[in-house]
Amino acid sequence: MRGDGDGWVFDPDGARYWGLHGAAGLLLRAPVDTGARAVLLQHRALWSHQGGTWALPGGARDSHETAVDTAVREAGEEAGITPAALTVRDEVVTHTATSGWTYTTVIAEVDEQLATVANLESAELRWVPEDAVDDLPLHPAFAQAWPTLRTRLRTL
Image 1: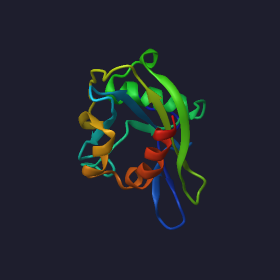
Image 2: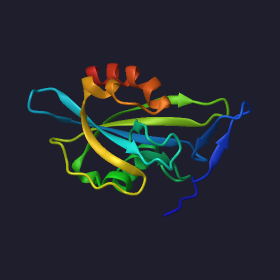
Image 3: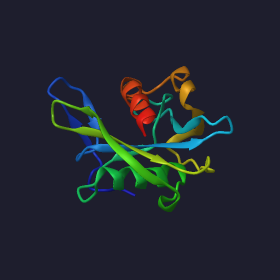
Image 4: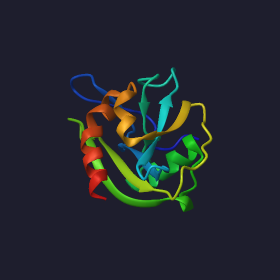
């Protein structure tokens, strides 16, 4: 389903960003048996921008959506996560481009690691312990944002 936010934004230096109105992703966390927490990550399909890397389910914002609306919708489309299953805790703008384009990470929690259903944008979905996220080949923008997000998670 195409929304009115689908499309590329280009910065003067040639950098491009998906989402005419910005983009958002869902950092969903759940407890694991050890008392630690895991986050849901998406192994991006090879055909996608930065394919083969790991990041959050997310995508382009439509003109009528908040960042939370977008992140929750995208998690439903890309991972089969239902909005009623999660509790939103925070939102953080994790990237601002020269053009004004932004990416917002929405942090949410669930009571347990939910079953997921991948769409064609995902090679795989996986619950990853928070302390093992750095072990994966991360999408460059997510890799840059992860230290800030990890710190933010500790305060929640």
